[in-house]
Length: 272
Image 1 (tube, rainbow, N blue to C red):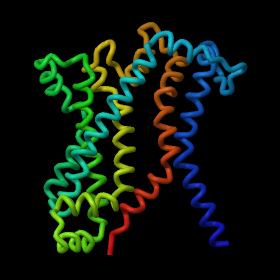
Image 2: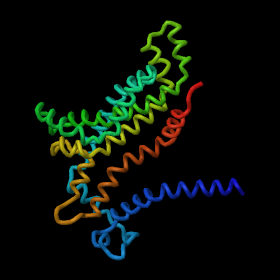
Image 3: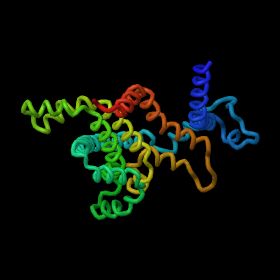
Image 4: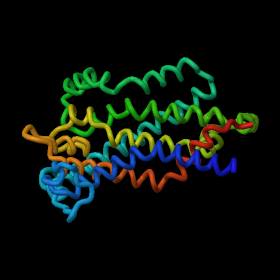
């Protein structure tokens, strides 16, 4: 009976935590499949009857959606790869040197709103005449992705058994060789988690692309903003655009959920 009550309590807690996100997603799906008349009806119409794809057609008609999708892929993949190239060695160095101040600085950079960096970066790229291209968007996204990667990798490298690297150093390996051949393979779950988190945060970023991008270099979150008009909010096209932007991240999370769970679990276990 006690185990049954514990399972019921756990299931209820999961339901309470997950249900708001699921209900919001289902409501967005309902809005995207209804006409604008049904979306503004009272009492609300929850189930489309009949469902329509006109809102999705309007999204592609209003925007060059495929171009924006390609821009988002280029920006997110580039910023994630650059963040990994910088953040993984940085996390290793901070963890092994036990640089508490550097870790605290990374944490401050992580929790600082990205909007705080926008004005100086905008002035810099405007002076360099790079605004309107994808390059400044990729660079500004590093403000978000690098602290994520570094912070995640610090916990993973701290959890690795130090004896393995010490044995490699005794055998004549350099610090770089110990990092590359010993620590890096063991930290693959952490790298997977850091990659997914960095990609998601970069993909969903709106402010930097809104300010720095040009007409041909906008990303998908900006395309969602284009659904807003001064006359009224078109809930159907807005929901359809939001779902199209969310779909790649949702699929990535579902496909990599085992790696995410394994990585987070491995990061929470200290090596003996």
